[in-house]
Amino acid sequence: MSGADAAASFDPLRPRLARIAYRMLGSVADAEDVVQDAFLRWLDTDRGQIREPEAFLRRVVTRLCLDQLKSARARRETYVGPWLPEPVVAAEEEVEDVTLPLLMALERLSPLERAAFLLHDVFGVSFDEVGETIGRDSAAARQLASRARAHVRAARPRYDLPREKGLEIAAAFFAASRSGDMGALRGLLADDVTTWSDGGGKVHAGLRPIGGLDDNMKLYASLARFFAKEMSRVVRYGMINGLPGFVTIEPGGVLQTTALAIEEGRITGIYVMRNPDKLGHLGAVH
Image (tube, rainbow, N blue to C red; front, side):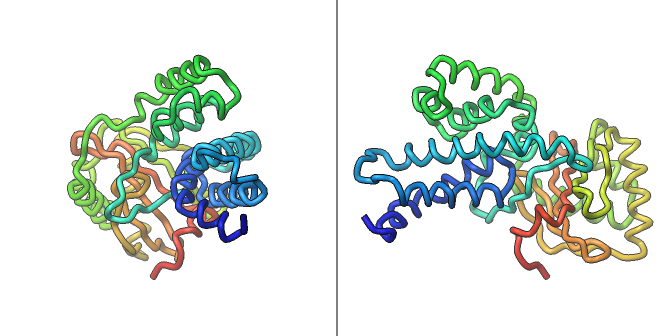
């Protein structure tokens, strides 16, 4: 079979394989590399002997991701400040099955727990196949997924927030945080709100999460004085890793995404990505 034949059978599966790789790795660039590596392996495979190409390629991608996670964990131990996954801004019709808080919770799992949970709970793969993919029997795969489920339970959405309402709150948050309207801002934030800011040591960002309403109010009061000198500009509002938020150009020309976790109408989590290495995939913005 030719390379064209290989591409014809592989390309329809590419988006789903990329979704698996991204959720395993939290990096768009690394996920794309893994999927391309899987395609090269597909080219060298005797494809006529593969009865279920999708299952075969799912195993290849997952195993490549498990290899990547070993080195990724070592890199993240020396990461400057809080680590956040690369933001993915969804098209309007897309519904995200793994939100940003859940992606962060997955970071606390072992690679095998992460694989078992994602393959079974998110992508609906049978435990027999999960076990074969990760080199364990079905019972062990089931136990890994169960253990993972218990660890990430708190990070799964507890409330169904309509998209329009979420984006309305995001717009209100942008207006209040940039204008210095502390009264309006206080009304938007939950008592246990936490702000994470990922600059990766490349641009200015907080070196630790800021937790609690009072400390967040102090943070945004100081930022408001900064914005009074040079205002940030919204490029677009949208869903970022399943959360309402916005893409902005900040003072100094820094590209930034902000995603908001919202429960019962109040913002409980603010996830700010400023690391330029994690924003290149968003393309040119104006």
